[in-house]
Length: 118
Image 1: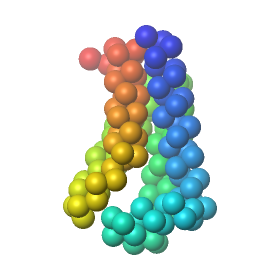
Image 2 (image 1 turned 180 degrees about the vertical axis):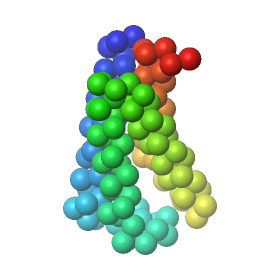
Image 3 (image 1 turned 60 degrees about the horizontal axis):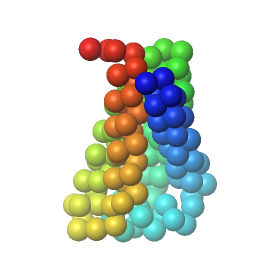
């Protein structure tokens, strides 16, 4: 269980950190998705901040497990909203958002299972 916890948490932290970087940088791929789901481009920095906080929180969860669970829960909520934003406008290109959602859910599940929060 330890290996699954470590791998999912590190992978989730890395991909969310990279996504935050792309938001902060104003990458064209992020702008295209924002335009497609009708999200104002000025939201990219605040959304990037949420992603960065989630990534840092996942890593901080190695020292404080409840913090990692809270960060993973926040990322699950973030990506539920992202999938909803895609569906709201009828965008069928939701593969990325669903992948991130499943990865955040896996990190949360692994955290809870490893630390036996129940």
